[in-house]
Image 1: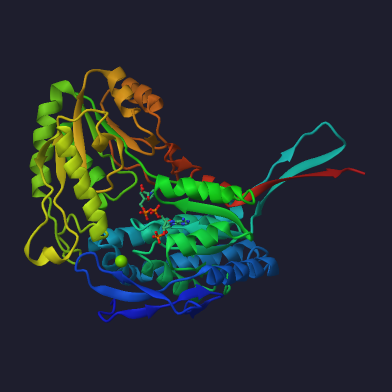
Image 2 (image 1 turned 90 degrees about the horizontal axis):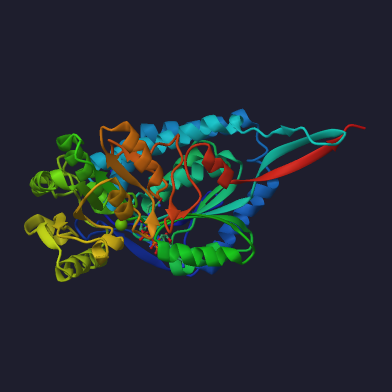
Length: 485
Ligand code: NAP
Ligand code: MG
């Protein structure tokens, strides 16, 4: 059980829990009640320096990357097993710290275990090549780890995204320093305890909690960091890319999105409505892959809107501890204010709000709850159709024909995810190829699978996580020629 009393949570450096060197702490709260759950150490630049130097020293000693592959894989598998054994414990931490409905949090913890398991199996399947060069000898390639990787995490899927980075980074033999989001530091700290129990050598996995502007910045700027993997907003990601320029650090970015969900008139509307609903309201809309622009072919537009609004009005907004809750609170009061501000913008732009945007009363009034919003009468140039609201707000817009659907879908600075619904296989493939997006699901809202690449085009990022592709982001290609004589 998560303690009801606020606890102290230290940084994790070299396998030990330590306070910040200046003793600073900051609270992390429960978004559903506003209660302080824990006081969390706030790393300063000196603490980050200690963490990176520790990770660097552990890398240089070679105890991790020189460990035989089967043993390295077995440790990652033990991490997966321990996560599975403790799904309920970890889900309670994630649910309480981030306001996630408990059932959703349990599902996420299962996927965290699957991620470690996938990369446990990948450790001894990373091959180089032998290349027939025009010389008397053999040319071959190796994939070499970097050393220290800085992994910067957002608050919307804290442990899921931590695992997407940590597991492939460790599989390649790197050591890591993780910087969780200030709003949701607790699950990464719980993972730190668990990886030690699984036998990961101390100092291979370090955690610096603290603010982005201090701890995050110091980590991204540290000269011993060779690789930065960042997930978060496009705005902060642009800054991280500039920080990485200093020292030519490798960088991969998973950033914002404003994904389109294209519904053709021949789609199975009822299944499409239910799936589309979750593809925008899951995690209270705080999902980079949220399909927050729904484009519907005109002959079925009215039917789709009516069914979507009716179902939205039945969404159960409630406490995360209640198993029947479909939507929990937003992460912070200030984030809810920013979503409400977008609702004002949408109203002022002339979009028609068909439901939602209310702050529930009663027991929910202490948390950051908001009822889900559907807009019609939207145009592609409106701010609510261009900018990432990152909350339960969706605009539904009609289109005429395939070419217009593609044009609207691509009218965005982002290109992360998306869906399309049609029973015409030729059209499905034509449209899938034409939409500028890193991921797309056809007749489904499911585009995230640990075995397959994940990431965005345009301002949604650089690089792909998950699958075997992610291993390329945590290693360098080395080319070696050996003469025959
Ligand atoms: P954020 O504000 O960009 O923060 C992300 C992380 O960066 C946090 O740990 C933050 O620390 C840290 N940070 C802030 N300023 C920094 C700096 N100057 N240097 C280094 N690190 C810094 O994003 P968020 O609000 O946590 O998450 C929401 C955003 O993430 C959305 O835009 C969403 O689309 C995006 N996202 C993308 C993906 C994807 O895979 N494409 C997945 C999930 C989320 P603090 O928490 O202390 O500020
Ligand atoms: Mg919290």
